[in-house]
Length: 97
Image 1 (cartoon, rainbow, N blue to C red):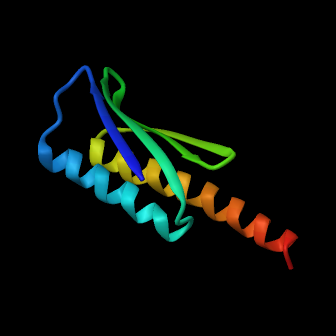
Image 2 (image 1 turned 135 degrees about the horizontal axis):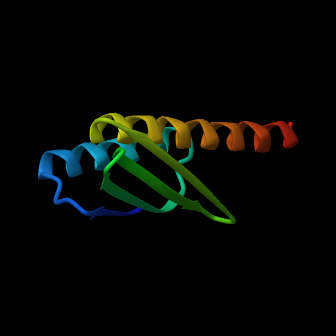
Image 3 (image 1 turned 45 degrees about the vertical axis):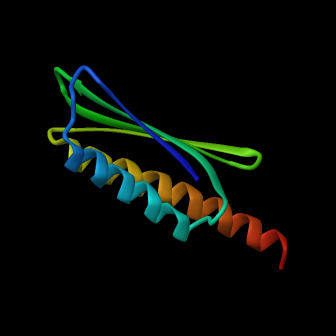
């Protein structure tokens, strides 16, 4: 899995980048063949935003969350994309039963 994390309008600490990477790596429990993940961390006047674009073979997923804290945004966005992956895998498994 190729993970790319970009920060916009702010330089986030290594601790935040490592936290984001760990959250993305945990998504493999839903689908073990994730090809690419691109996460954009952005500091905006309204708050801090985490945007995740995830690619598996033949399908793309996206999630974006805005919160007052970047770790909260990362956590919410990774949970949202995790739900999308789980739903996709469950649907595919239903077809093959």
